[in-house]
Image (cartoon, rainbow, N blue to C red; front, top):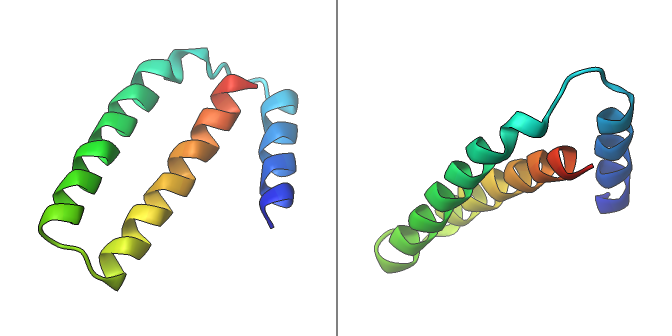
Length: 70
């Protein structure tokens, strides 16, 4: 599954005409927000739903980073 997602996002980044180089600042803000959310969650609200939420947001963030980096 990971290989399929990585291949699909790489193919999308290589074939699209959209310029993703301006997304760097947004990805940085998104990652800092995720970091603060994780710290908050580990200290106060850690349960299965919270874990699923943080994992889902992390997958989206690293997918965006993959598109940005390629």
